[in-house]
Image (cartoon, rainbow, N blue to C red; front, side):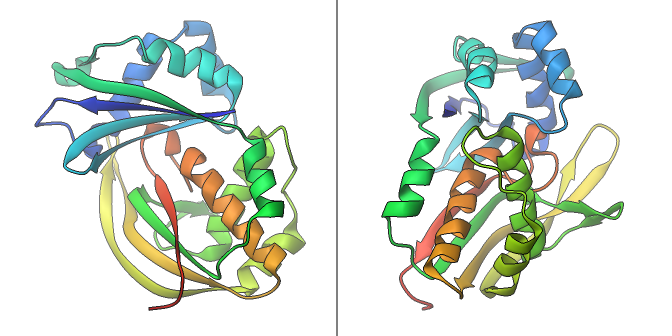
Length: 246
């Protein structure tokens, strides 16, 4: 089960630059034992991001397992304001709601729903990858697909997706036809990581099955995020599609 807790915040000060502090709010409001387990995990069963939606400031906390939903979203949904202690800032929560999504729907859609050949990905918060110890700050398709395959396989109860041959085929049969991107710094406590935001349009070649597979990964990515530091607000995406390459 995937879940998305949306909280509309009343704060003229907060921006995505404070996302790492928002992770601290999560850790302060969940059980200490579970927080410790999260620190030990190789991959987080949640992502979070702070974005503007229709002029409103919205904080999303998204979980990828039922256990994470019970231990993160349920306690966080009880809050009426956020206390960001490091910034001595209180942010009232104006509205909140939780949306649930059955993981099996992704598999059902894979088999039952036709996929268009142009897939659009919007990078809502700074996105980056790490390869051979170096930060990669551009949308390399192999890194995008590889990140999603690893996250899905680690956290999914439905399917193991770690397959180098499939990753190679996805990369070879995909092409970025259009992009509108810029680099943006994402601040942590003592350093800044450069990432990219904006959008890309991917054209899918190959079989219909391969295109559906790419779509499934990207729709999963709306919950998991892409790349590094998704637990502190990086790598948030929104999937879309184009009927044609306009």
